[in-house]
Length: 474
Image (cartoon, rainbow, N blue to C red; front, side, top):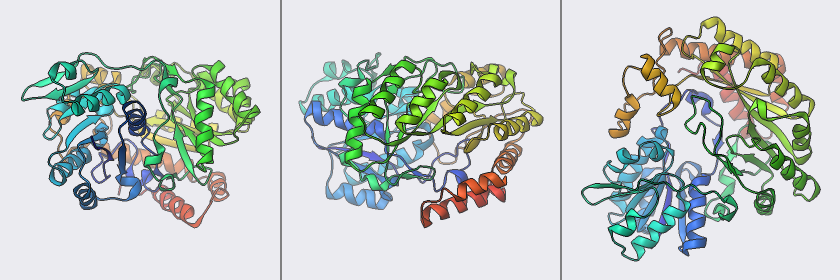
């Protein structure tokens, strides 16, 4: 079988809690999920694969159709989030026009949340809920061998239809992550990926663990099993990336520092045996200490992204963050003393939050003085604990994410559902938060020193102008 993976163009993405004007110019990261599935299919199944990353490769729908007509696949794999479901469905239609015989399999977080609803959409032949490496390989093998319904029903997480919808009740969860091959990066052009606040010339992403045991109510992977790769396995992938010319690495683990012992071991390997590489991570404020931060610095870590959210304890408790201001201040102080930069994720518009409390969060961000801060508007994302709680409390009047999953339309807009502030008011306050944080002279001077190229400068000027002139709602 000829298998084609596609990352849809970005033309109809639903606006998130971060304004598009602040997202613009940030760049693209490789889609590790698809590349991991492709690698497993190649190594274990023995099937050749191809990949088209439309945003990174600047491919629009007409060009996508042209390529598919020139080399029609038998099976297309697409990973989708709820926020790019419209573009995903436009891609499905493009595939069906250009390669009518091709079957389409959908995976990704939206499928994990809404498997039956996704399978019921026109043009979708299969869905895989859960981790897709092994299940997708089994699907390709079954289709290639002409297997019947019994074999399809035995594939974990698989949904298929023959007039009726069939969904496997179980999902695959891979416990031994070291057994997976490294993502199939030979399918992409690494030079097509970049990020505005990166440090190196050629970036890459790497995932060393899956799952997060934390209980944050706004997150759709809360209280999930934490599984990790061994330090030596991670180092081997980094070695391969360095051979590809990568000099800047972003660990996309949700919370890589859950197991401090493993992180210390990985840092020790990178420090004593190499390779030397710049990297950044995401962590919780309660999962770091001076020993770990010193080790991260020695190993090449230059920035840590922390979820701070709010300066008000009752709001932190409402979101079940499991943190407090003392832990937050301590983590940022320790990080600064270790010589590592930081990024603070803040949130405004939390149910019952006052304007004064939102401004207190800006004050806290200024006090913490991270390199960057992002102020998102509290948004009940689909099937999160926050969403269910807000439905129960009447903040959200009906299950509008469910309606969208059943009938995705281009006029859909994300809603913030705040009783005390309108959406326009929240966007205006959000603009004020960013302006207060970024208009300080020390921030402007710091950013000027970090400019790497003319293109990098222009991207920063574009976003900076939007912030300073409060044009993020335009």
